[in-house]
Image 1 (cartoon, one colour):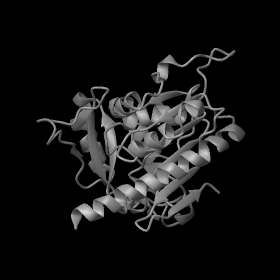
Image 2 (spheres, helix red, strand yellow; image 1 turned 90 degrees about the vertical axis):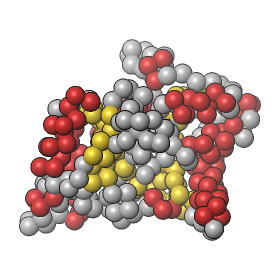
Image 3 (cartoon, helix red, strand yellow; image 1 turned 180 degrees about the vertical axis):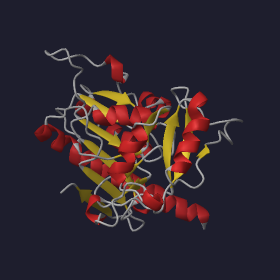
Image 4 (tube, helix red, strand yellow; image 1 turned 120 degrees about the vertical axis):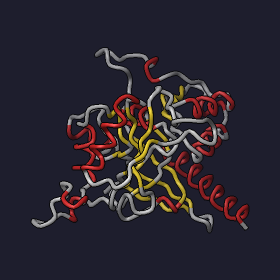
Length: 283
């Protein structure tokens, strides 16, 4: 029974990946970001299935060792984020599109990411893209973040971990903990950047539309609005990056004049156990 359920989930991820790639990867694209996680396996499969005549002029930018290995195995050209050419302004070229998974997606396309401990490089790649497309199975769809995925992954400098844990508790996170490296390795989970991951549980995160004069989402009684929590966390000494992807998307970034600052996807593709794909688009 468990095997059958896993097969349905993998089929859902595969269907969502193929549709997302069909909808958003164009033969004119030159630089493409590829995220990490179980769903990205199918994103790379979908790209490779299009054949060298389609992707032959593309270069793929991975978010970590896992996606780098997938791209190499598929025979796709890759480069690291810092190896991109620069444009006439001396600015590294933007990625045409970024595909990545998600641990949870709310109704305004805010994300939790970092279950695979690649959140720092995932965010660096996401903000380098003109548009970001999230791909997942339908279990990852929630009205509010921290509903089904209960914790926010936070990448921290190891020597700062005790202080960060204390400050998180003061912010209303009941039992933040350094992630274990088991079963792969004893000790702490160490990221590709040599950092640790803290998993910090919070009550479901409010959206701006949920706020009232009585509930301001600024942490009273542990109640946070997603953007306010993100702003507070990134200011904390010792935190390298957080697994909240919020703010605005790539299309909005152009109109706001905030190139290379967009964290949110323009769309999320969710595969369902019935084989259908639900698409949630930015409004």
